[in-house]
Image (tube, rainbow, N blue to C red; front, top):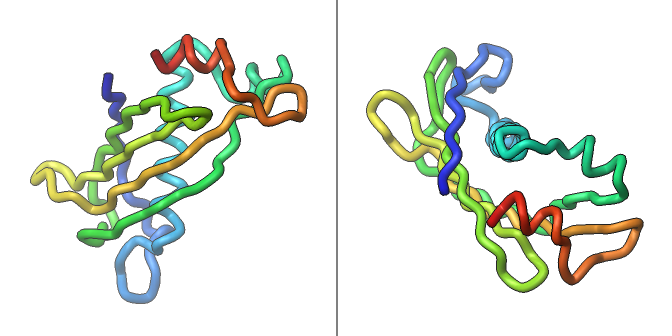
Length: 128
């Protein structure tokens, strides 16, 4: 399953070169992961209240084509389980031409009641 959210670049996200500052791509991917979870019927805040935290362990971003102010784009997210990690593969594509702007790989681990968990049935259920 691939989740998609559409967004638009805001002026303040751009640097002096007139392109989106590199740190903002990480914000876009994080927002997309949160929206994906909400679409599946849960939220990071709800999980936290139950002692379950999905924690970023590693992020790899590959910048391909810069986005500019007012560009519309989509973040497409899919997740797979690899051992104890939930691996989010995320593409940020400029619309409407579908030009790849950034490719991200985000490794998430589950921390349950303060301890790294080898498995988390709640997250497994959402991301199956």
